[in-house]
Length: 163
Image (cartoon, rainbow, N blue to C red; front, top):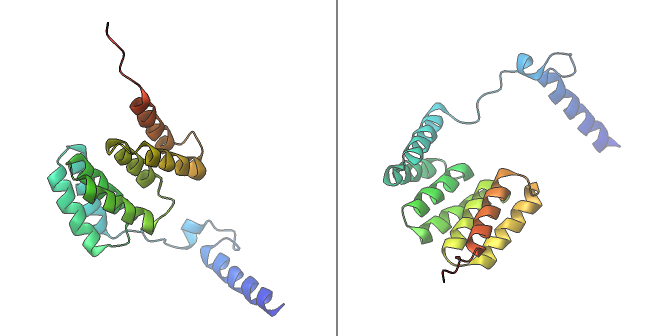
């Protein structure tokens, strides 16, 4: 029973700190800092801008610098994998996606992009594996599942015969 009392006291302290027991909304009671530092935010913003402009070399350089400083940023590794894949560096791209999934096994974007990479490598079986992972993680209506499903279906479509 002592464990339960200790847990309840800790929970009450945390809820009070958040303002939930006092009837005050959590944001009004506690100034919750942004997860990322301004430098980290700027680096990711710049990398996303380079990706949007299809400037793959610049995006890769920005993201490689970013992950050296923030080696646990799954989003950055996912974007690095995407940028590398778009620049034709498939093997390195795969390693970046694998790192993103190592950090966050439920990273839907990394599952989607890894599945797309597998299709480009002719590994439909592996693409289907990642599609299955997305279905397990978010069902069949999340954007990542739908995008990979379209890619898999497109890869399955045989070209029409011309007689």
